[in-house]
Structure formats: structure tokens, C-alpha cells
Image (tube, rainbow, N blue to C red; front, side, top):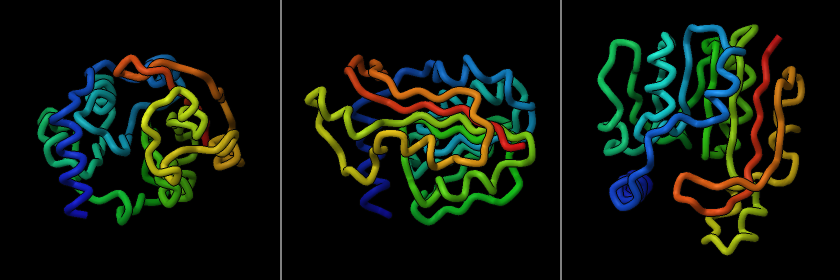
Length: 184
């Protein structure tokens, strides 16, 4: 865990991320009921801040204490400094789960149970094929396979799903899978 924390702290120091909210969240937020939300691997809080401003009570979870230090102090944001490889989601707790640019398959299996009835999941991350653009490919364990995201959430009502070529926050060409789904 200490090595992961140091690596992520260095990454945030070396490559500060823009603070604009994820377009996926901005576009589909009207499908979510204001209530309890979690921003998994929240980084410096770009999505957590947006959700908080809308009235959500947000659990902002990340391993980087440096990044969490950039998340604003607010009565509507609870900062959780933890190793997501060991963290467990509380069943039936969230009206909204946000997971952007991060993949932990152990947590994927917990997300459906963590949603309340009527809860919404917004999930977007990288697909193995993004390596086609000559970007340094990270551990393949952290990249989705084709249609994996869609298959991982069978049982939820899909509002939106797409696999597409996109441009990341650093201006690099990537391939991502995006899902918005509701638990009924």
C-alpha cells in the first residue's frame, strides 16, 4: 500500500489533472436521485465537487493523500484515504456510484449490491485497445476487454453504453468504455 500511495502521490504532483467534471456525469446526472454518492478513485475531487455542489452527500475515496488534500473541505464530502484493493463498498448505501478512469474488478463485483433500489452507476474507463495509440500501456489488469463493462453489470437497466475513441484530459487519443445504468 505504501508503494501505491507514493506512486499515486508522485503522479498527481508530476501531472496535475484539469478540474473539469467528467462529461459522462454532466450529461447523465439527471438520471440520479440526489442522495448518497461515492466517487471511487476520486483523485483531486473534480467529480466529487460537482456532485457536492448539486446536493449529494459524497464519499470521496482515493489512496493518494496528496490528491485528497486537494478535495475541498465540505460538510457534504467525506474524504476516505484508503487502499481500494482492500476497501469494501457498503451494500444498499448509494443513490449514485461514480467510477471514472479506474478499474478494480474486485469492486466492480460489489457495485450492484452497493446501489440502493433506483440507484445509478456511472462508470467509464480505458479499454485494452487504447494501447493501439502508442501510449504507455499499464498493467492489463487495469484495462477493460471489449464489452466487459457491459457484461459486468448485467441485471441493471442500461441507460447508455458505448465503446469509443476519445481524447483524455492530457490530450492523448485513447479508447474508453462508458456505462450509465440503473438498479430497479
